[in-house]
Image (tube, rainbow, N blue to C red; front, side, top):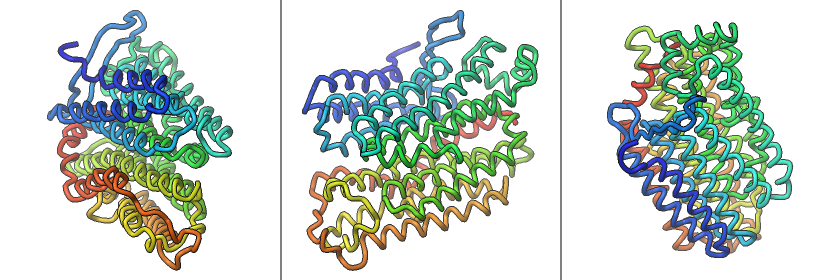
Amino acid sequence: MNGLPILTLLMALPLAGALISWFAGRHARHIALVFAGLTLALALYVWFNVPATGGMGLVELAPWVPSLGIEYHLGVDGLGGLMVLLSAIVALMAIDAAKHVYRLPGQFFALALMLEAGLMGSFTALNFFHWFLFWELSLIPAFFLIKLWGGPKRGPAATQFFVYTMVGSVALLLGFLALFLATHTFDFAQLTAMAANGALSAAVNAKLGPVMLVLAIAVLAGFAVKVPIAPFHTWLPDAYAEAPSPVTMLLTGAMSKMGVYGLLRIAIPIFGAQYASIRPWLLALAVLTIVMGAWAAVVQKDLKRVFAYSSVNHLGYCLLGIFAIAIPTAGPALLDAKAAALDGVILQMFNHGITAAAIFWFIAMMEERTGGVRGIDDFGGLRKPAPVFTGLMGIVLFSSLGLPGLNGFVGEFLIFRGVFTLSWVAATVSILGLLITAAVILTVIQKVFWGPVNEKWAAFPELHGSERLAVAPVLLLMFLLGILPQLIIGSVNPTVMNLLTHWSF
């Protein structure tokens, strides 16, 4: 470990903020904003110091429990650095959105910062034991944030969320304990190298028998719940709908990326050959997630449930890109297609996190103005009393729709550009998801903002100055990444090529 431990500080800052916020009472939000802002500044430093070679940078390595293969091992490449940046942005957005937490504010903001610390640890840890601690750390505050500050059905929603994710965590833990018995290491890089040269399968077969596929499915199940992959998604709509909207911002904007990140950092590198053997089934699950998520959104009447299912749909595109690349590379054309799909997946993770969090931010502002009303059919004509609100939320909705010129377009385009070469059937069927999503979002815009004004909302308050100032950087980022996606792709592509070089299918 050399120099200043930047990644350790990245985890320690929100934890320190959580400790202070817990006892700060009505000042807790301001303290949380300060610590979330400092964490964002540090995350920006991390992002701008990601190695241009695509390898790991800012590495911190120290023995922890050597006899058990446990090391304090942190590092980031383009993938981890981008997820750290996303988590810091979304956490700051969510804390800013939580303006009306009057009951136990200290505990609320302390738990939100603890959740941010869990995210930072999950996106930087390179040893399974260390990574798993932070994976679980993010679960606990999320459960209490839903359970204590959620809606009328918060109890069942929080319990369902906890049970699903805990079962997934148990599957992950059992899978990696089996790997440790065979290899005596928890280090992701070592396990990836062993998988690439065949030593991992040989070690597992010698110690435990032919169970590599079983272990691969167990690990996949853990990440399938977190993404979520259909049919393991049923916890998500209730959790998103019942959680306070700022908490929903954290769940959809950052926590859902933990599952996709886990597939890219852990599952595919270690079990790539096993996933390649069941690739058609995995692609079918990805297509089901895309189409089912979009169709389910069609029939929802609650805005939060509409965009909860829409979130499932959008993350399905990430799954499509990931599972499509699980085939042996033969020739430069196939490698180019894999790189395009993987670039698109990582960009989609970031773009979806920003856009989905922004949508729930605007829904939070609608709830504040209406006393909690969020039914699609409860509104109408809001563009007349609140044209600025309508225009700015419209930009975010069009980003979610994938309008060219906004950030939501580029990632999906790259995913389909790669997947059409790798699996044209899956790509073709998945286009249904794009069409249905467009219909869903246009319906929301028409029913909520257009048509005759519902007299109940004739005096719907316009965005005030501080709200416009708060959302402006997020909207500018959407335009910037829609026009100049190379600002991210330029740093991510070396990581993508490095990953593809070391993965074995």
